[in-house]
Length: 129
Image 1 (spheres, one colour):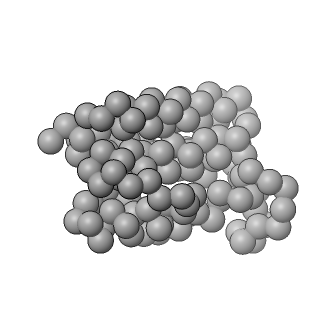
Image 2: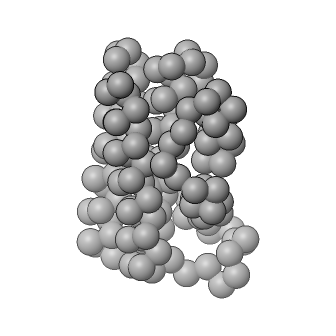
């Protein structure tokens, strides 16, 4: 594994651990922000490892699309990508949301952490091959 890939994975692991701590503390926006960042970094780690090109985007959907076009499958659905993309801005900034009456709660945080955990496993399995 490339050194740069390992760094991306370290940061992603820290985001995932932070998300759980934030959920346990009732800090839902910050939890969701860390989940999104975790998945973004995991997908970018795969790009760095196999394709040596880092794409400057925060869009999980775009990153998955790039990987799919290159023949690399990550265990995340298009709907899950859309969910993480949708929560990105409202979890970071107090602006209008594309989610009607956006109020993050423990349930959405747990669901998103489960997505990130599955993506984490998928990426690690892929990198071990």
